[in-house]
Each structure stands twice: as C-alpha cells, then as structure tokens.
Image (tube, rainbow, N blue to C red):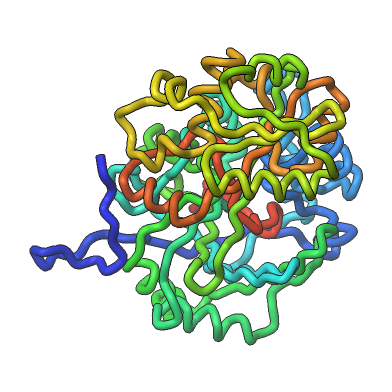
Length: 433
C-alpha cells in the first residue's frame, strides 16, 4: 500500500488530514550535582554501542551511566530487564534522576564535525504505517522488538528518543520557536567524548508549545533511526489501548530542510565465513578485485564502483576486496520482482537476497550476522575473529524517503542517519503520562 506523500494537510475534499501530533511531558533528567558529569552518564543509542568493549567503557565512565538502563546485564532477558527497572527506581529515589516540575517540549541541539542539528523532543501520538503519518523504511527483527518491548514494559519508561525527520523550512511555524529558544540560556550543556556539543532547552510556555505543535501538524515524518523502538511503541500501544501514556512515544523531530542529516551505511560482520571462503564463492558470480592501499583508499574505490551499480568491500584478512558487477541472470533469479526498481537496485537488497541467501547461504540470525555502524570497528572485529566484514556504501536520503512514501520497506539495517541523539539527556516515564 502506498503511503500518502503530503506536507500540506488538506485533501481534495477540503478535509484536514491528521499529521504529527506532539505533546509536552514531564521529562526525567539527571541531576548534575549527583553525577560526575553529564557527558559521563550519556551513551549512544543502544544499538550503536559496540559490545562488549563499548559497554564496559560506558559502565566505567560513571556508575550511573544510562547504559545500565538501556543495556542491563544479567543471565537472562527477564533478569536484565528487572535489573534495569530496579536501577531506575533506585536512581529516582536517591535523587540521581529527577522529574521536571512542568510538562515541556525540549529543544535539542548537537554541534560537531562541521554540522549543526537542532530539533524538538516530545511525546508523539503513535500511528500505524498505513496512516501515512510516520513512515518506516526498514524491516525489523522480531527478537529485538520482543526484547525492547519487555524492557520498556518492565521499566515503564521510554529510555531514549527515536530520531524522526520531516521537511519544513524557514517559514514553518515550529522553526521560529526553535530559533527563539536557541537564543536563550540552555537547561543543560555538555560535550561528549566524540567531540559533539549538546544543548537542551525546556519549552514550558503553552503558547510556544502550541506553535510548535501547529507547525508539526502539517507534516509526516520519516523514521531515520529507531525502527525497532517504533515497532516496540506500536506493540505496547496495542497491549494498553489507545488512551493514556502508552499511546505516545518519545521522539526527536528534526527538520532536514534546515538541518540535513548525514546518511551512513551499516556494515555486516559474517561470523562463520572467512574472507578466503567468501571470495572463492563469488567466482563466476561477481567481479572481485583485491585493492592496494588502506581503508580510506578502499572506501573511495567503493564509492566510485557504487556509482555504476551494486558494489561491496570485503575485509577481515588484512586486505580489501572490491566486489561489483553481479551476474544479471543471478540477480533476476534471486531478487524479488514484485518490488519497485529502486528497491531491487539497493545494495542491501542484493547483499541479502543474492549474496547472503543464495551464494554464501548465511542465515540472517544474530549468531551468524552482526550489524556494525563504525567502519573501522567492523574491519577490526573481522580481523580479530577471522570473519568477513561486508562494507557498504550509504544510500541517498531521497531514495530512502521515496521508497518509504511508496510504502516499501528496505532490508533491515540499510541506513544510519546521524548524528544520533545522545541517550540519557531526557527520559519519559509512562506511569504519570
């Protein structure tokens, strides 16, 4: 089913379509005096933390790091989630975390690496994909959704915001509020170890909240990061019904007309497949060339090859192997014909449908494949484990949005939009709305 491609919300009958509906909430935030520093208690989103090294690093940064809630440790999933709930309850009781006195929307800004990103955090009314208000673009894995749902159910808390994007512009009513708020003294400011500066403002004025809401009500949004959490929100809303706090989810909304995001690829680590075996299996299937030079040179070669068709880099044996020109007859046999041409040409589509399923016969299961955002980390891990890292070139944002508006989902973990919001700056409990 095709989702409606709209920003102006009036259809041919003159009826107003429902767009994004963002509500203020009483945020839960760290009390700065009770932690070593705000930067020491934040974390990347749960699925970006490279475990176990990244997990241990964050846990040791401060005993109250948010990773103890989003990635709790324990022998079973149920024990981990109970541990997270107990930890959250203890931190609230001890005053490490506190609930803001007034319902607010939160303006959030990130600066670093030559870019500025500013958006608004709030509780978004949940909607199904068929409604065309929030557009997913990737498939999800059922086991991850089940795990996230149980964690959220047990803690009764939205622990980290999703990243959603919309297309507004300077004339959008919400833009003026965000600009005015950005000139005020922030509620908090910190710089994380990646060099990004983070600032958060609280918008408690009902008139300003209404102005932001009025602007957002004209738009639909694309899920840029957090498909599994969005699927979790929808599952829990169905469990609890349409009324009450479970009918909303914590999100960060960014206007990409004003603040374009960067789109990066998510790489695959194939645990049981050595590079030599992977390369041998491609004989007669694709062109494979071993490249001279370092990772940066190999990535430039990948970008050049990707401009002409499907291309991948294989790494893990101390060298880089460029894979391109897959056999057209094999593609015709292995790639679904009932999808749009744009979907059929995606590197992730060809990787999963043709190489993983038909050539290498690697199941898409956690024990066989890991998904790693950081390119160098993927290469390093493959070399350590004797595995194969498959490095991909990023998809353009307009391709992602076009497929989403057609109601077509991309293969899971196809894209990584960023910068991603830091986890731990504001949480939303579901007990009091």
